[in-house]
Image 1 (spheres, helix red, strand yellow):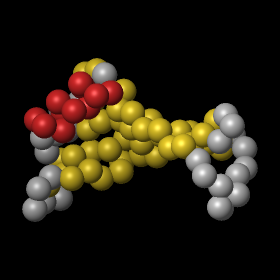
Image 2 (image 1 turned 60 degrees about the horizontal axis):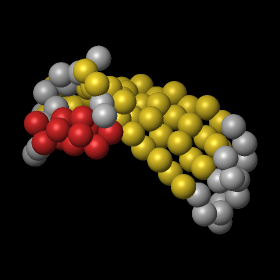
Image 3 (image 1 turned 90 degrees about the vertical axis):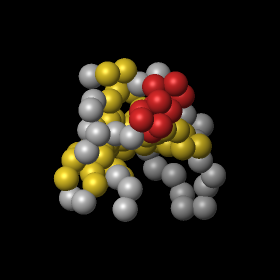
Image 4 (image 1 turned 30 degrees about the vertical axis):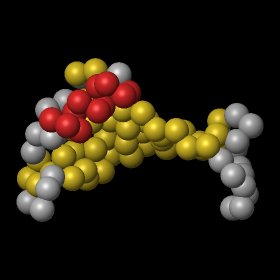
Length: 85
């Protein structure tokens, strides 16, 4: 099985309510990374910010933290501008 992410920490901030059937925009970016972990910033938008969340994810293989695969690391840096923390 290849390495995959495990959520180590999750912080969320509610801004305002929306309905179940409403269309929203979900954004995601990776602002920072380390050897085995990285941060995701999420936001939900509908006529302004509705909800934001930050997750710390750890790359795990066979139940043990492992380095982020090179291709995943490359995408985080090139696509999102992630910086080494």
